[in-house]
Image (cartoon, rainbow, N blue to C red):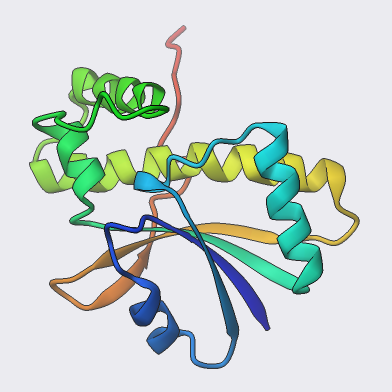
Length: 164
């Protein structure tokens, strides 16, 4: 089975992914903090990669210690990098909502929320433009446990709610 992994180059996860997914051919597409630009040009390029290599699964992967995520949650030294401003705005909104009790909860929920949004954008494009069904998921690599964990599901990461 062929898989595409969308990773952040600061995480250096390619070898870990290859180690855990030894029964597949793995392809990698990188963007800082998985801040993948989901404009039509980028999505068409990804679709071309999927078709060219007969890829059946796409996985967004970030490390729980991702430098871009940690910076967005704390110091924001990288906020002036081109095309990162929307990414930082989304992370700042999650911080402002204060729905988590611990920094680790905030980190995992922030990563999950962000990746769920990216998954939704890519999945919508693929559903419209592809005849074959392609599974798109998100994973968080935890270096403490040396394991990949599924992100929190979209249901857990509601974009908004309304009380009647």
